[in-house]
Length: 345
Image (cartoon, rainbow, N blue to C red; front, top):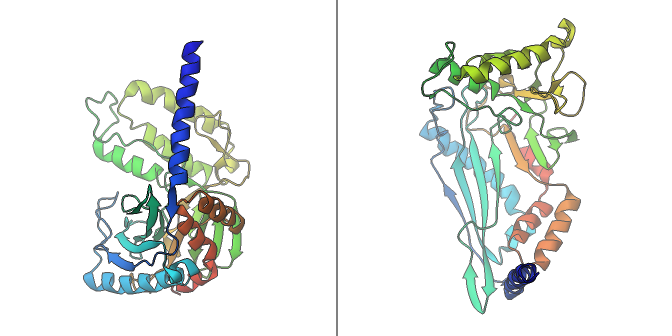
């Protein structure tokens, strides 16, 4: 009984300390701040999963920085960044992962960092280590790859027992199955050129072909079979192949050519034919307008919750004196409609 009481008191004591610390922290909302843009070498971080590099030129990177800076000006128009008080802001343009199969435009991961100023225990402190930040992806239609299909790559297996295993085939089969993903939320067209999937926004050119394509049941199982028959451990491979073959056998020929959706979680494949809000997708390389320079912005993915959610976040984070307040406020004040005007046509 004493032990329980002691543990309870310890928990209360810890929470009390955390509460006191939170109360002792005060954001310096009126302290003037600075703002700068930092640029990494935007070379595509090659080679990609296919063993190829994108080889973006210095000239392309220079033009891309100009385009990305224009994009950032949309964010700079928000009141919180125009006022620039309470934090030192940093825009960091980082090289994004290129993809020679499904990509085209120069990819970039964009960071907006808020190095917040606070008064903590009577001292003025700037948060420079992992400050509140917002990041989004430019020119990457493959952001959601592996969502629900992240299979392990056993290409470096030691002492394989499966005669069908080989390093090259295992790697290629893993890369292929991991190109698939479940749609990341119910699709809602905000306006032509802006689609919402839950908290994620996709900004694109609506005059181009679809940026993602649905995948058939036949194709999904082809990739699953190709992956599992190459798994190095024979004792693992054989029962898994039997299960997948049994599940595939339940579909008629016409069903196999229909689109795949998230199925029963009780099945191993988790693939179904019943239409729902979670279809199996794969990036469409035909989306890109390859007549445009590779330095142009053609596609963006940003995590921006709906306005009501952001409004509540702004209020809550300010009450807690949490530096994330600046991020939520920026997103709340952001005119997302202006983002689509930065997409090249």
